[in-house]
Image (cartoon, rainbow, N blue to C red; front, side):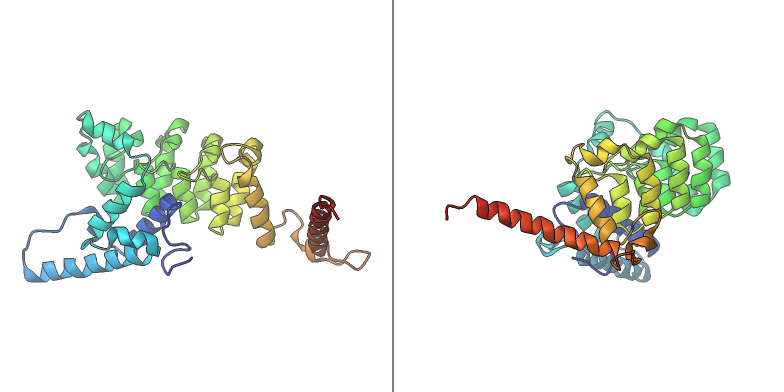
Length: 308
């Protein structure tokens, strides 16, 4: 079921793509900082009133994007942050990496200025930081949940993303955020075909890194969002076995074929599917006939097993 914020409300099986879409929405509405911060101490009445309004907007967006069965989990939440954290704790799979870092006392607070520079779009300051701390390019910042390129894509700082790619090794593109998503998934989510192309040129193996918890392939994810051109680019570098077998036992390939038919996406000569042939028939109509034949065959097989 769709909602006004994204194509699908949160259910038991789609937390990762849901969280990416809602985070992008809140960033676009300048509300993401409300989700990241605690309720401020009571101060000037005007500032407190503004915070309450922004918190209500963010919380309402999260509530609207939840299915009825999920909404019950956050029915008592009075802040956007508490609602987000409740859902994160319930659904997340890959936060163990972050928890391990915290348990071992690793302090990554020094990354804060770099992320702030990128959020503001200040590449000059970000580059100065990386000159002094080149290892930061591949570090996961616990407060943000991803690497600096994850964050740059999320905030649509695409010029900075291109600069960051110059600093990165191909293995850096395989680093996942706290939900198990690579930067490629973020680029797909933003519909940026140029960034997707740049990434798979650097490391085509990331096209086979699936999205948890459903183990969806990036090519199928792109198609599900309606980014057909991105899906075509990814299809060319996706190993066939990822679509024909793999963890989902070929369901990705089957769903991709079905999606192509539904979207009337027929490859090199799409117009020919609706062009009348020499027998005055449409090729696309033949598919319907084949479906009819299959149904008749199944009926025959069923009747053949009956004792009449």
